[in-house]
Amino acid sequence: MNGNKDLPIKITEVCLRDGSHVVAHQYTEEQVRSVTRALDNAGMHYIEVSHGDGLGGSTLQYGRSLVNEMKLIQAAVEESKQAKIAVLLIPGIGTVHELKQAHGLGAGLVRVATHVTEADVSAQHIAMARELGMESLGFLMMAHMAPVEKLVEQAKLMESYGAQAVYVTDSAGALLPHQVRERIRALRESLDIEIGFHAHNNLSLAVANTLVAIEEGATRIDGSVRCLGAGAGNTQTEVLVAVLNKMGIDLGIDIYKMMDLAEDIIKPLIPGSQEISKGSLVMGYAGVYSSFLLHAERASKRFNLDPRDILLELGKRKVVGGQEDMILDVAAELANKKKVEVQS
Image 1 (tube, rainbow, N blue to C red):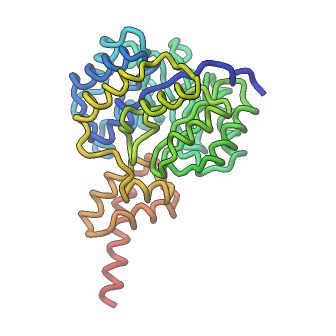
Image 2 (image 1 turned 180 degrees about the vertical axis):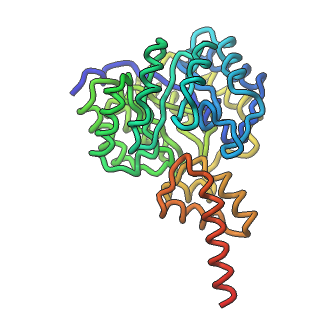
Image 3 (image 1 turned 180 degrees about the horizontal axis):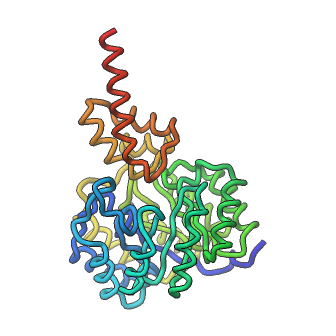
Protein backbone atom coordinates (compact mmCIF):
# COMPACT_ATOMS: atom_id res chain seq x y z
CA MET A 1 0.00 0.00 0.00
CA ASN A 2 1.24 3.46 -0.92
CA GLY A 3 2.60 5.71 1.80
CA ASN A 4 0.35 8.58 0.69
CA LYS A 5 -2.11 7.41 3.34
CA ASP A 6 0.12 9.18 5.87
CA LEU A 7 -0.04 12.54 4.06
CA PRO A 8 -1.96 15.40 5.73
CA ILE A 9 -5.62 15.83 4.82
CA LYS A 10 -6.27 18.80 2.56
CA ILE A 11 -9.76 20.31 2.38
CA THR A 12 -11.18 22.00 -0.70
CA GLU A 13 -14.16 24.25 0.08
CA VAL A 14 -16.68 24.06 -2.78
CA CYS A 15 -19.44 26.44 -1.66
CA LEU A 16 -18.40 28.98 -4.33
CA ARG A 17 -18.56 26.33 -7.08
CA ASP A 18 -20.95 23.49 -6.14
CA GLY A 19 -22.93 26.04 -4.12
CA SER A 20 -23.39 28.06 -7.30
CA HIS A 21 -26.12 25.59 -8.28
CA VAL A 22 -28.12 26.56 -5.19
CA VAL A 23 -28.14 30.26 -6.05
CA ALA A 24 -28.76 29.61 -9.77
CA HIS A 25 -25.21 30.83 -10.51
CA GLN A 26 -26.08 34.35 -9.34
CA TYR A 27 -23.12 34.99 -7.03
CA THR A 28 -22.02 38.61 -6.93
CA GLU A 29 -18.40 39.71 -6.76
CA GLU A 30 -18.87 41.08 -3.26
CA GLN A 31 -20.36 37.79 -2.05
CA VAL A 32 -17.37 35.89 -3.42
CA ARG A 33 -14.99 38.35 -1.80
CA SER A 34 -16.78 38.13 1.56
CA VAL A 35 -16.88 34.34 1.61
CA THR A 36 -13.28 34.01 0.43
CA ARG A 37 -12.00 36.43 3.08
CA ALA A 38 -13.77 34.50 5.83
CA LEU A 39 -12.63 31.09 4.58
CA ASP A 40 -9.05 32.28 4.20
CA ASN A 41 -9.12 33.80 7.68
CA ALA A 42 -10.38 30.49 9.09
CA GLY A 43 -7.43 28.62 7.58
CA MET A 44 -9.11 26.86 4.63
CA HIS A 45 -6.63 25.05 2.38
CA TYR A 46 -8.29 25.41 -1.06
CA ILE A 47 -11.29 27.43 -2.23
CA GLU A 48 -12.91 26.38 -5.49
CA VAL A 49 -14.47 29.17 -7.56
CA SER A 50 -16.22 28.73 -10.91
CA HIS A 51 -19.63 28.16 -12.44
CA GLY A 52 -21.39 25.19 -10.83
CA ASP A 53 -20.66 23.14 -13.95
CA GLY A 54 -17.08 24.34 -14.08
CA LEU A 55 -15.21 26.75 -16.30
CA GLY A 56 -17.26 27.78 -19.32
CA GLY A 57 -20.49 26.58 -17.74
CA SER A 58 -22.31 29.90 -18.08
CA THR A 59 -24.62 28.90 -20.95
CA LEU A 60 -28.34 28.67 -21.59
CA GLN A 61 -28.14 24.91 -21.08
CA TYR A 62 -26.42 25.00 -17.68
CA GLY A 63 -27.57 28.42 -16.49
CA ARG A 64 -26.13 31.86 -17.08
CA SER A 65 -23.88 33.34 -14.41
CA LEU A 66 -24.73 36.78 -13.07
CA VAL A 67 -21.05 37.74 -13.09
CA ASN A 68 -18.36 36.38 -15.42
CA GLU A 69 -16.60 33.61 -13.51
CA MET A 70 -13.18 34.99 -14.43
CA LYS A 71 -14.06 38.15 -12.55
CA LEU A 72 -15.10 36.01 -9.56
CA ILE A 73 -11.88 33.98 -9.72
CA GLN A 74 -9.85 37.18 -9.80
CA ALA A 75 -11.79 38.55 -6.82
CA ALA A 76 -11.15 35.37 -4.84
CA VAL A 77 -7.44 35.43 -5.66
CA GLU A 78 -7.22 39.05 -4.50
CA GLU A 79 -8.93 38.27 -1.20
CA SER A 80 -7.01 35.09 -0.37
CA LYS A 81 -3.79 35.49 1.59
CA GLN A 82 -3.07 31.80 2.33
CA ALA A 83 -5.65 29.55 0.67
CA LYS A 84 -5.06 28.43 -2.90
CA ILE A 85 -7.85 29.21 -5.37
CA ALA A 86 -9.06 26.18 -7.32
CA VAL A 87 -11.28 25.71 -10.37
CA LEU A 88 -13.24 22.83 -11.87
CA LEU A 89 -13.10 21.99 -15.56
CA ILE A 90 -15.32 19.50 -17.40
CA PRO A 91 -13.87 18.82 -20.88
CA GLY A 92 -16.53 19.63 -23.44
CA ILE A 93 -17.84 22.48 -21.28
CA GLY A 94 -14.57 24.17 -20.37
CA THR A 95 -11.58 24.39 -22.67
CA VAL A 96 -7.82 24.82 -22.41
CA HIS A 97 -8.42 28.51 -23.24
CA GLU A 98 -10.47 29.03 -20.05
CA LEU A 99 -7.94 27.02 -18.06
CA LYS A 100 -5.10 29.28 -19.20
CA GLN A 101 -7.20 32.35 -18.42
CA ALA A 102 -7.98 31.13 -14.89
CA HIS A 103 -4.33 30.31 -14.32
CA GLY A 104 -3.35 33.77 -15.53
CA LEU A 105 -5.64 35.27 -12.90
CA GLY A 106 -3.99 33.26 -10.14
CA ALA A 107 -5.88 29.96 -9.85
CA GLY A 108 -3.38 27.38 -8.61
CA LEU A 109 -5.29 24.11 -8.80
CA VAL A 110 -7.69 22.52 -11.27
CA ARG A 111 -9.84 19.43 -10.92
CA VAL A 112 -10.47 17.99 -14.39
CA ALA A 113 -13.84 16.25 -14.16
CA THR A 114 -15.21 13.53 -16.39
CA HIS A 115 -17.90 10.89 -16.19
CA VAL A 116 -16.53 7.84 -14.39
CA THR A 117 -16.08 5.92 -17.67
CA GLU A 118 -14.69 8.78 -19.78
CA ALA A 119 -11.30 9.62 -18.24
CA ASP A 120 -9.70 9.56 -21.69
CA VAL A 121 -11.12 13.01 -22.49
CA SER A 122 -9.12 14.55 -19.63
CA ALA A 123 -5.61 13.94 -21.01
CA GLN A 124 -5.11 17.30 -22.71
CA HIS A 125 -6.42 19.36 -19.80
CA ILE A 126 -4.51 17.49 -17.09
CA ALA A 127 -1.29 17.76 -19.08
CA MET A 128 -1.81 21.47 -19.81
CA ALA A 129 -2.41 22.24 -16.14
CA ARG A 130 0.86 20.51 -15.24
CA GLU A 131 2.62 22.46 -17.98
CA LEU A 132 1.24 25.69 -16.53
CA GLY A 133 2.57 24.73 -13.09
CA MET A 134 -0.87 24.19 -11.53
CA GLU A 135 -1.83 21.33 -9.25
CA SER A 136 -3.70 19.05 -11.63
CA LEU A 137 -6.18 16.55 -10.22
CA GLY A 138 -8.65 14.09 -11.76
CA PHE A 139 -12.32 14.03 -10.75
CA LEU A 140 -14.30 10.89 -11.67
CA MET A 141 -17.96 11.90 -11.43
CA MET A 142 -20.97 9.62 -10.82
CA ALA A 143 -18.63 7.04 -9.28
CA HIS A 144 -21.56 4.81 -8.28
CA MET A 145 -22.28 4.05 -11.95
CA ALA A 146 -19.17 1.95 -12.61
CA PRO A 147 -17.90 -1.28 -11.03
CA VAL A 148 -14.79 -0.95 -8.90
CA GLU A 149 -12.57 -2.49 -11.59
CA LYS A 150 -13.68 0.12 -14.13
CA LEU A 151 -13.11 2.94 -11.62
CA VAL A 152 -9.55 1.72 -11.05
CA GLU A 153 -8.93 1.49 -14.79
CA GLN A 154 -10.13 5.05 -15.36
CA ALA A 155 -8.19 6.42 -12.38
CA LYS A 156 -5.02 4.83 -13.73
CA LEU A 157 -5.60 6.64 -17.02
CA MET A 158 -5.78 9.98 -15.20
CA GLU A 159 -2.64 9.10 -13.28
CA SER A 160 -0.86 8.30 -16.56
CA TYR A 161 -1.84 11.73 -17.93
CA GLY A 162 -0.12 13.43 -15.00
CA ALA A 163 -2.91 13.80 -12.41
CA GLN A 164 -1.47 14.27 -8.93
CA ALA A 165 -4.62 12.91 -7.29
CA VAL A 166 -7.84 11.26 -8.42
CA TYR A 167 -11.20 11.79 -6.72
CA VAL A 168 -14.00 9.33 -6.21
CA THR A 169 -16.87 11.73 -6.85
CA ASP A 170 -20.29 10.75 -5.51
CA SER A 171 -22.14 13.26 -7.69
CA ALA A 172 -25.57 11.77 -6.95
CA GLY A 173 -25.03 11.18 -3.24
CA ALA A 174 -25.90 7.55 -3.99
CA LEU A 175 -22.96 5.65 -2.50
CA LEU A 176 -23.32 3.72 0.74
CA PRO A 177 -20.41 3.54 3.23
CA HIS A 178 -19.30 0.04 2.23
CA GLN A 179 -19.25 1.13 -1.42
CA VAL A 180 -17.08 4.14 -0.58
CA ARG A 181 -14.75 1.89 1.38
CA GLU A 182 -14.23 -0.59 -1.44
CA ARG A 183 -13.66 2.17 -4.00
CA ILE A 184 -11.16 4.18 -1.99
CA ARG A 185 -9.35 1.04 -0.89
CA ALA A 186 -9.08 -0.21 -4.48
CA LEU A 187 -7.62 3.09 -5.67
CA ARG A 188 -5.25 3.29 -2.71
CA GLU A 189 -3.90 -0.15 -3.56
CA SER A 190 -3.62 0.59 -7.30
CA LEU A 191 -2.31 4.16 -7.60
CA ASP A 192 0.87 5.95 -6.55
CA ILE A 193 -0.83 9.35 -6.21
CA GLU A 194 -3.22 10.86 -3.69
CA ILE A 195 -6.86 9.81 -3.54
CA GLY A 196 -9.71 12.28 -3.07
CA PHE A 197 -13.38 12.03 -2.14
CA HIS A 198 -16.27 14.37 -2.95
CA ALA A 199 -19.64 13.58 -1.36
CA HIS A 200 -23.24 14.72 -1.68
CA ASN A 201 -25.71 14.44 1.18
CA ASN A 202 -28.83 13.18 -0.60
CA LEU A 203 -28.98 10.05 1.59
CA SER A 204 -27.66 11.86 4.70
CA LEU A 205 -24.36 10.00 4.41
CA ALA A 206 -21.92 12.72 3.31
CA VAL A 207 -20.03 13.06 6.60
CA ALA A 208 -20.11 9.31 7.30
CA ASN A 209 -18.92 8.48 3.80
CA THR A 210 -16.17 11.09 4.05
CA LEU A 211 -14.93 9.58 7.32
CA VAL A 212 -14.84 6.14 5.68
CA ALA A 213 -12.87 7.61 2.77
CA ILE A 214 -10.36 9.16 5.18
CA GLU A 215 -10.04 5.87 7.07
CA GLU A 216 -9.16 4.17 3.78
CA GLY A 217 -6.49 6.72 2.93
CA ALA A 218 -8.18 9.56 1.05
CA THR A 219 -6.24 12.75 1.72
CA ARG A 220 -8.02 15.20 -0.62
CA ILE A 221 -11.44 15.93 0.83
CA ASP A 222 -14.23 18.26 -0.26
CA GLY A 223 -16.61 20.15 1.98
CA SER A 224 -19.16 22.93 1.62
CA VAL A 225 -20.05 25.40 4.37
CA ARG A 226 -23.60 24.88 5.62
CA CYS A 227 -23.99 22.06 3.03
CA LEU A 228 -24.19 24.65 0.24
CA GLY A 229 -24.16 22.49 -2.88
CA ALA A 230 -26.31 20.75 -5.46
CA GLY A 231 -29.07 18.43 -4.25
CA ALA A 232 -28.98 18.22 -0.46
CA GLY A 233 -25.51 19.72 -0.57
CA ASN A 234 -22.06 18.34 0.15
CA THR A 235 -20.20 17.24 3.26
CA GLN A 236 -20.84 20.12 5.67
CA THR A 237 -17.38 21.60 6.19
CA GLU A 238 -17.82 23.00 9.68
CA VAL A 239 -19.35 19.72 10.86
CA LEU A 240 -16.53 17.69 9.30
CA VAL A 241 -13.90 19.91 10.92
CA ALA A 242 -15.60 19.48 14.30
CA VAL A 243 -15.80 15.69 13.92
CA LEU A 244 -12.17 15.42 12.84
CA ASN A 245 -11.14 17.62 15.77
CA LYS A 246 -12.94 15.20 18.12
CA MET A 247 -11.01 12.37 16.45
CA GLY A 248 -7.72 14.14 17.17
CA ILE A 249 -7.15 15.20 13.55
CA ASP A 250 -6.15 18.88 13.45
CA LEU A 251 -6.56 20.42 9.99
CA GLY A 252 -5.39 23.86 11.08
CA ILE A 253 -8.89 25.23 10.37
CA ASP A 254 -10.54 27.37 13.08
CA ILE A 255 -13.84 25.69 13.95
CA TYR A 256 -15.34 28.81 15.59
CA LYS A 257 -14.58 30.93 12.53
CA MET A 258 -16.13 28.26 10.28
CA MET A 259 -19.26 28.21 12.46
CA ASP A 260 -19.51 32.00 12.33
CA LEU A 261 -19.01 32.03 8.57
CA ALA A 262 -21.75 29.46 8.12
CA GLU A 263 -24.20 31.37 10.29
CA ASP A 264 -23.40 35.00 9.51
CA ILE A 265 -22.31 35.00 5.86
CA ILE A 266 -23.51 31.83 4.13
CA LYS A 267 -26.97 31.48 5.73
CA PRO A 268 -28.23 34.82 4.32
CA LEU A 269 -27.10 33.79 0.81
CA ILE A 270 -29.17 30.61 0.70
CA PRO A 271 -32.64 31.03 -0.85
CA GLY A 272 -33.99 28.09 1.18
CA SER A 273 -32.78 25.61 3.75
CA GLN A 274 -30.21 22.99 2.69
CA GLU A 275 -32.18 20.01 3.88
CA ILE A 276 -32.88 16.57 2.45
CA SER A 277 -36.08 17.34 0.59
CA LYS A 278 -38.05 14.76 -1.35
CA GLY A 279 -36.31 16.00 -4.51
CA SER A 280 -32.77 15.58 -3.24
CA LEU A 281 -33.65 12.30 -1.52
CA VAL A 282 -34.99 10.82 -4.74
CA MET A 283 -31.79 11.87 -6.54
CA GLY A 284 -29.70 9.82 -4.14
CA TYR A 285 -32.24 7.01 -4.34
CA ALA A 286 -32.35 7.06 -8.16
CA GLY A 287 -28.63 7.77 -8.55
CA VAL A 288 -28.88 10.87 -10.74
CA TYR A 289 -26.63 13.91 -10.93
CA SER A 290 -27.32 16.31 -8.05
CA SER A 291 -27.51 19.40 -10.25
CA PHE A 292 -30.51 17.86 -12.07
CA LEU A 293 -32.94 18.86 -9.30
CA LEU A 294 -33.66 22.44 -10.38
CA HIS A 295 -33.92 21.37 -14.03
CA ALA A 296 -36.35 18.58 -13.11
CA GLU A 297 -38.46 20.90 -10.96
CA ARG A 298 -38.74 23.42 -13.80
CA ALA A 299 -39.66 20.66 -16.26
CA SER A 300 -42.25 19.28 -13.86
CA LYS A 301 -44.04 22.63 -13.70
CA ARG A 302 -43.97 22.98 -17.47
CA PHE A 303 -45.44 19.52 -18.08
CA ASN A 304 -47.53 19.20 -14.88
CA LEU A 305 -45.58 16.20 -13.58
CA ASP A 306 -44.14 15.03 -10.28
CA PRO A 307 -40.39 15.86 -10.44
CA ARG A 308 -39.68 12.56 -8.69
CA ASP A 309 -41.05 10.68 -11.69
CA ILE A 310 -38.70 12.61 -13.97
CA LEU A 311 -35.69 11.94 -11.75
CA LEU A 312 -36.45 8.23 -11.40
CA GLU A 313 -36.80 7.90 -15.17
CA LEU A 314 -33.48 9.72 -15.66
CA GLY A 315 -31.91 7.24 -13.25
CA LYS A 316 -33.33 4.28 -15.18
CA ARG A 317 -31.86 5.70 -18.39
CA LYS A 318 -28.49 6.30 -16.69
CA VAL A 319 -28.44 9.94 -17.80
CA VAL A 320 -25.24 11.69 -16.69
CA GLY A 321 -23.96 15.23 -16.15
CA GLY A 322 -23.80 17.09 -19.44
CA GLN A 323 -27.08 15.61 -20.64
CA GLU A 324 -29.32 18.22 -19.02
CA ASP A 325 -31.05 18.76 -22.36
CA MET A 326 -32.53 15.27 -22.00
CA ILE A 327 -34.50 16.31 -18.91
CA LEU A 328 -37.05 18.21 -21.01
CA ASP A 329 -37.21 15.33 -23.52
CA VAL A 330 -37.88 12.81 -20.75
CA ALA A 331 -40.49 15.10 -19.17
CA ALA A 332 -42.26 15.51 -22.52
CA GLU A 333 -42.32 11.72 -23.02
CA LEU A 334 -43.71 11.13 -19.54
CA ALA A 335 -46.37 13.82 -20.08
CA ASN A 336 -47.44 12.25 -23.37
CA LYS A 337 -47.58 8.82 -21.76
CA LYS A 338 -49.67 10.22 -18.93
CA LYS A 339 -52.01 11.89 -21.43
CA VAL A 340 -52.49 8.63 -23.33
CA GLU A 341 -53.22 6.75 -20.11
CA VAL A 342 -55.85 9.32 -19.11
CA GLN A 343 -57.51 9.20 -22.54
CA SER A 344 -57.63 5.44 -22.53
